[in-house]
Image (tube, rainbow, N blue to C red; front, side, top):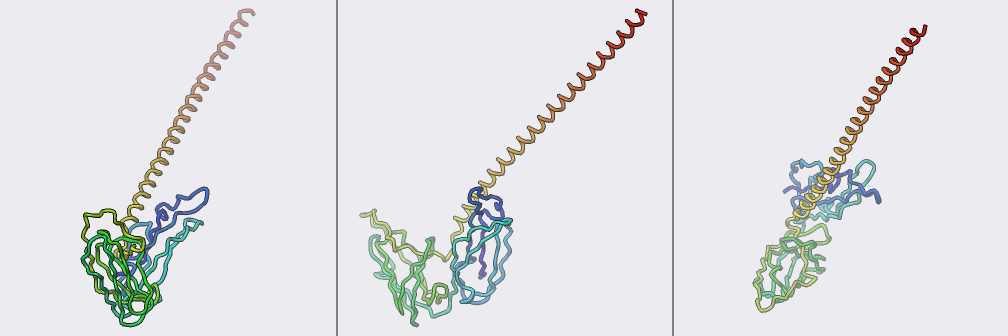
Length: 282
């Protein structure tokens, strides 16, 4: 697997000239890791370079407790520096024994029931993490020595999925993952008002969700296209105005020359008549 910190310069290199005239702030970039924010210890393969100009890739050749940690990225446009991105916690795994994960009352429950996951590690630690494969913002954690409980409830069908747990001595150095436990939740048609409680939010950092990032990028790209189109219209209008002014100036010069020519001809005719009259008088 490849461990690459990928910093998306969101409205950065591609739209680096979009600067607020009031606050003079560049847009905040976005940072994520490939293939995941959790990487087993050891050397990594070199990644393929990304073709987009607004994406910078920073390769980490080996994952260790020293390279794990919290990362941010910034970028510069001319003399302006952007604000830092939101932090990314990069975790190294497979440093300790493998924990065991179990669920009670069982892996198959009905919506509305209370469920508890138990994570146990043979060697003493001080922190445990429970993660659900899917899309949620943060992993749930509990402090303990060899075993902790993660209560969930009342459950709904939104809690269906595969769960794993880790043991850890800090936020960035974790154990091997436990064997997966799949939770099945069947609907209770007698009660449709159930919803997850606040403490049932889990991380799905197994597959970092870049769909939102890509959607935001496409929206920004569309916004940039709209701005470019408006700028093009302004330039075209300016060119039309310049061409019109040139035509008006050329017409004015032509009329002026015609008038000067006519005045010259009239003056010559007057002089000719004056000379003729003078000769007749003599």
